[in-house]
Image (cartoon, rainbow, N blue to C red; front, side, top):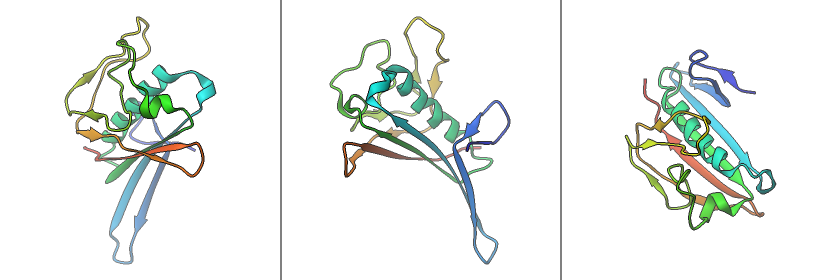
Length: 145
């Protein structure tokens, strides 16, 4: 279950935990999880949601020392699709794609799905193949206060 961290403005973190050693040192971790099935047909919205979750993790510096975005899918569209539509191409996390800190991402579908997103850090997206038809993305996110 998600945990409300930082009030309603930030939203729920999927997984949050703290490890403490015998000397009282603590490490706190926030994790956002996504699993996208091919049959759901929500690709543009899902891509936006991944970047929204990365932004949420970046905003967790008051409660986390490290964050991770984990995405699993059986749909190669997320992993290696050759091209995205111009309306949603900002939200590209395909294998080998990069994001440069400060670039504003805009969801240009004509609707009011969500506001533009700007991230604080650079990211490089590297997918791994699973032992089945699933592919996995593990992205480390550095939270800022």
